[in-house]
Amino acid sequence: MPIDPGAQRVLDLIREMGRPPIHTLSHEEARAASAKSRAVLQPEPEVVAEVEDLTCPGPLGPIRLRRYRAAGTEAGEALPCLLFLHGGGWVIGDLDSHDQPCRLLANAARCCVIAVDYRMAPEYPYPAAVEDSAAALRWVVANAAQLRIDPARLAVGGDSAGGNLAAVLALMGRDGSVPAVGYQMLLYPATDMAGNRPAYERFTEGLILTDKTMRWFIDHYVPEPKRRYEWQASPLRANSLAGTPPAFVMTAGYDPLVDEGAAYARRLEEDGVRVTYLHLADQIHAFLTMGKFIPASALVLRQAALALAHHWQPEAPL
Image 1: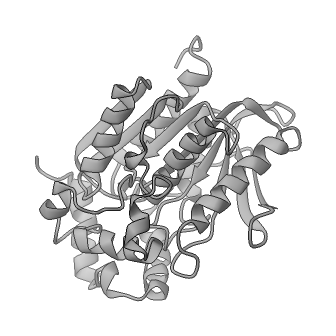
Image 2: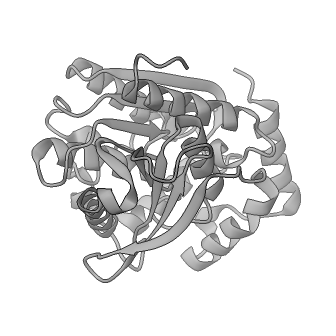
Image 3: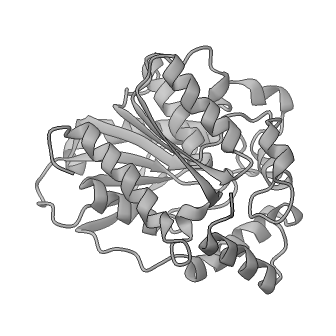
């Protein structure tokens, strides 16, 4: 399958700029390089009805949140809510890196999106990101009235590392350690920290995320190898996915995470969970934050948002 022309242009641009691979950088340098690329790769953010920066209590202090309300919604309306966990290998990314996708998701699903700025590695390795994500979910449910959201229509979602955290929250909700959610949106999720899937052998050079880069992220996030087999780090290794909420799972063809994302969708189906699985054979990892060059970014985000909106209101026209 030929790679998407827009994705190829991004890869060419990175090579022309001489940006070194992430796994050759320190975590501080990787964060700076990622932040610098946003203006180049991301389109102008959509206008929403409201944007508000908030904090909630966390295990080691306040957790930053950002709340979005869809354009065209009434100020007093209790909207359905998507708790969104950003990607970036648990090392890079923040509220600003995913501001544009969160706005698009809010508008397309006609909902509230609350993004979480969880603690990141290596300063705060696993399970800090899980703990902060869980604290944010508990706080959102406890403060639903103040946030003007409907706690009966609550979803979790995220891309890459954020997809990992969303899948973990869905499992925790099933087991009762956090409030249960009604839907999970997993966008090219990382689901197995063992890092030994065949895709790791296929994608070793020339991409933004390669086998070496992914292992660099894993080494920062879960430095103790034995803990990589815990389901809170590797949800694919949970004994069962039965009882978790309906899911939208998306994978990209040129991505070392493609095998584990596809395997997660299959496990969900085998364990009796309703799942919509979308595979983009010509796309690269992280394309959802490269919409200025890759038109499929907006298309896929809207597909995910419409799947979520249909779950909340199956009788409503799309």
